[in-house]
Image (tube, rainbow, N blue to C red):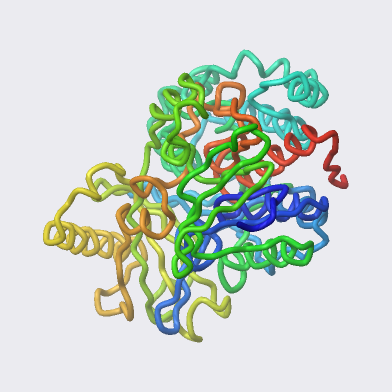
Length: 504
């Protein structure tokens, strides 16, 4: 058995990597365990011949000055990955015969766009903008939500401003409620647009997305925020974080799957049983555990009923993530693409569902010169995929591949012979790639009863066990999970009488 580590971090996605890098930078001995052969998780990549495909996430928020990634990278003394700002951040085609909606980076240009697209909706957008400004001030002070201890409460009270108190009555409302409050509840086209956009970032349509969360994600494309396209691949984000982790003495073990967590007899240390592939079973020791896996995995990792409070186990067993994803990965000759082809396009479709397309930039390292990768994803129920027999599974895959390709052809005006490469991933494949139960994507869904003060806490009722990731406040995306990692690390360090101080 190896020597006792200060911390073992389970899961090598962006949340786990951020937590491990932060704690190693503070001088703790840190070991990160990743079950896959590479890091990145849902923001990882894979290659097919000359093509590099992003597995899940295809855009990044928080690289602008003051953004979450920018702050963390500055603290860790590493350079952010090379990136281009997306402008427009996305183009949304409602497929109703009207011009597509362009989400411009310049706020005034976006104001003019939405005024033309959704006449009479300005009160709604102004309300969202006001809520977002209060949220941004609050988040910049690194509050802790949900509050579980006096220390958590102190951090959160210090972050509160008068505007946040004014927003408090909205914490139980949805984005749909904001539409009604602003007199726009009857605008069916605006509601369709919001449903498409919020489904991307909250796993929920507007009538189930928390108002305080939705108001901010609807502002992500506009200055001073922004969405970014990474050069090379999404993997560059992981590469920078692992460089910081190893520079500061942290260790990374790939193909090491944690299969059991247990406290020793005097509850002073954690014993972690690891399936280390070629090395067989190992047992590692640590004082603290930071787990970035979906929280639904915890009951299986801690089977001893004496080591997990019954109420907490029951709560975790009831958690259901709302979505899986079907993802089409393809490549085409670039000359087949429209001259004004956006980097990211959302198109409303009845079957198999609304598509989110990501097209590589010329020279960004994802495809040879003169060619482009095209990724198209659609949400689906995560249930039922693992139970299909092989013949039925392959039949369903082929039908969906052909259906999504037809949707992409219509969205980009592509002939069917344009495709140089095509393949499909399903929740079944995603479960194998990421180890997520049922291949779920995103977190638990940002509905009012699961967001902010009503969500799942990073501080668990089990001493020395901390959570981070897309099921923990403030939510999904690489920027959100990075902030969840920072919050968990602050709590961990505070439990030792220490602190993490990020430069402003």
